[in-house]
Length: 141
Ligand code: ZN
Image (tube, rainbow, N blue to C red; front, side, top):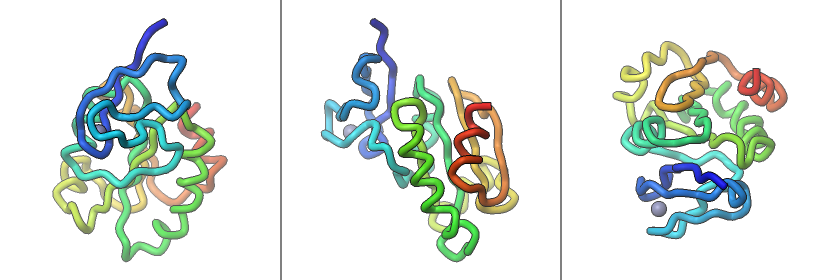
């Protein structure tokens, strides 16, 4: 049975999670935060970068801002997608108003933009709000 490396999205420590524990309430060995909460987690650029580089599960980042209406409209859809993809991918949110450097670093031209990362690399991105079903099918395609 293999194990997956997951970055704790709260304290940034790396955890090894046995594959049979994915989606079953795995917790960070350091701070106790849920590693696979089944809902979007707010992250800062440092934790995002560490998770992109180290995680064995796909990571989807929603680049958004509080002033952006379409971003707020998509939030419940993104949360629902996080639940649907629990154990298969982790969904995170990065507030580009609070962290403007991240928007530049990831070349975000409009928000919301979803960026999917896998094994240290950007796999794809999609600008514009999407409903839950499209987020899930976009990620799986
Ligand atoms: Zn932790």
